[in-house]
Length: 118
Image (cartoon, rainbow, N blue to C red; front, side, top):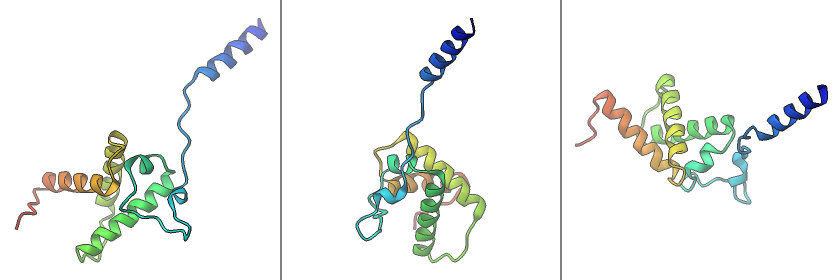
């Protein structure tokens, strides 16, 4: 009886689906250690470790804030945007991250009533 329970437990564990292995963000670096952030896909963001995804989305936030000449960080909106980008990326793995960010930012602006038209 005990052997049957052990065997059943082993079979059950073997049948449980496993998550895909996470990939270090450094995998996408060139020989000099640089990552072309304009070429990264949503699949690559969604497939990396949470800490790497956090670092990457923080970098993108700084990049966009620098382009807009903003010198501050809205921590709450930043975390919300990061979450929305990752959710979007999981649903659209073939898109570039910069395209996903554009979609998420547009949606966030619309929710806030911000019109970007000149």
